[in-house]
Length: 154
Image 1: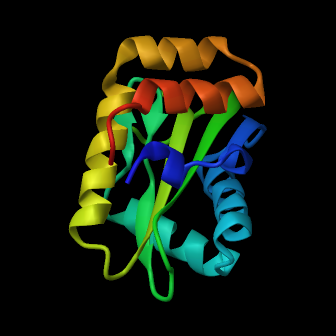
Image 2: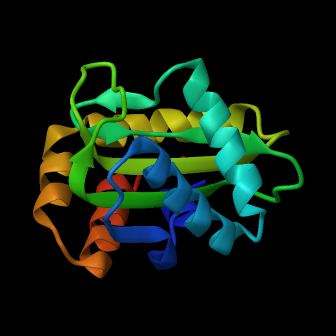
């Protein structure tokens, strides 16, 4: 699976004007529900439950919340760029401004882990993050994410 299979133009959100971790997760759940057809509250509950196990703020201003849901037909991604960084209890204690939500079917197993690994590698690249932070256009953000992730596949 390629990033373009996870991330449509409609699943790139800018700007996110939330001022707290909870608000960011609620907004991502809302958009994930719209693209997946799944219940917003169940998406929010799953990602919030995952956050309680340990932060998905991986450092350097990036978070990758994720979770598995029943009756989901495939993996979905939502990328968001925050207008102002928020405290996400990240491992390096830095506020986050780039966030990629991944939701997967309960049965996804290795696909879910491979997708997380690929997304994590993408956001560990400081040049990619720098370009994303310098871009304030929704369509350019989407294009940049696809261009930086391809030809690699998830």
